[in-house]
Image (cartoon, rainbow, N blue to C red; front, side, top):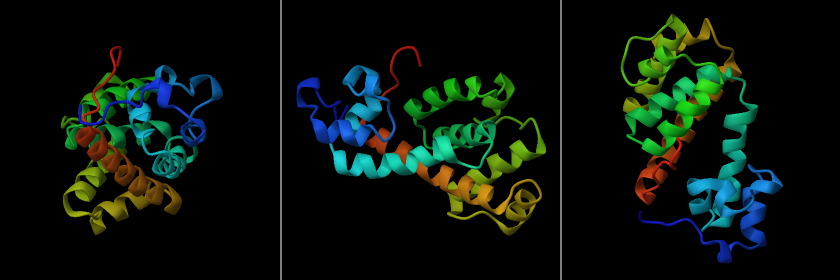
Length: 176
């Protein structure tokens, strides 16, 4: 681990304010926040800004939760981010993804045409930094303009998190 979680004795009001964007009061501590957020707490200003964005992606996005989680799982797999993949396999299951859908995020056949379009969008964005005209047009048949925008930012946001988590050496907690 390159960056360890911020020790409890170093948690101050700035850290708690930064994490309060994402966490309820009872989780504003190292154990409640978990490894990733406790590590990000080392830079409260950056964390607060990033968590506002992440909060939109996770809780206010126009995407259906299953679609969001499938996209997150695919980018986590492509970026080889064990932490993100473990957490979002758990969240995806809770949001209704089937075992088959979760498995498809690592390269299997997608369960539906829309699932395949989401996986294609992740692959194209991660590989070429844009979605092809064909995939965009096909997505347009299923998703509104705002949903397509949320999809792009979800893939990019979670790709960024995967890079950070991998670089900082954040590993999944036991139980995930």
